[in-house]
Figure 1 (cartoon, rainbow, N blue to C red):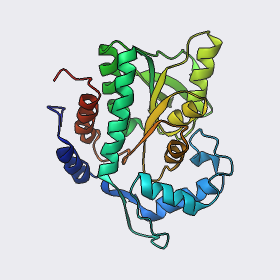
Figure 2: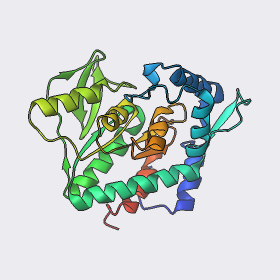
Figure 3: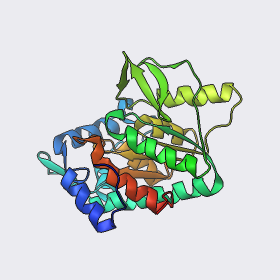
Length: 264
């Protein structure tokens, strides 16, 4: 399903629901609540590169934010079964993200792209990077030879990823972003003006004080908490790994058009 035009908001909402990027998503309620509880219990694997302290020690507070910003069921007694992402909130998030991308294009900013979900979101980031480059932005090239305990930090199609065993790796860790920013500083190179990412890549950049925007699933609450506190600028709610990465094409077309980054 290649990008072949820009959908209206109503068309995109329908598409998000049909492809389960939003609406009734594949992530079950019990998985969502388990992740909210683990974050509240200070399991740093669920902090996504952020420093949340003891501000979110009550899982019900986490659930309240997720209901407001993502559209999951707000009933704490609803513990098993289907959970949801409100597609209207997804499009609202895309509109906020588009506004920040437009600002980046107007200022010809340095932008770094990264993903911890290459199986789903790599091409979303690649297309966005290409559009910003065409608008005059500098897409940050990461230093060579970076490594974390999980694997090598590399860059494919302008997007930083984690590589392990000749495979692009799914990761929630903020350590790959730490490796990039530390190497840039040590080389005397300027840090990005904007980071467009997901998972710990977005969280660590935001915690480091950079303008950071990103995508997050309904079982990854940390970025939405950071957005509610003003640490992260934008968190777009969506299922970050649906059955085909091509399902995100229409969403990407909408985003780039809203940002003024298409020729249409």
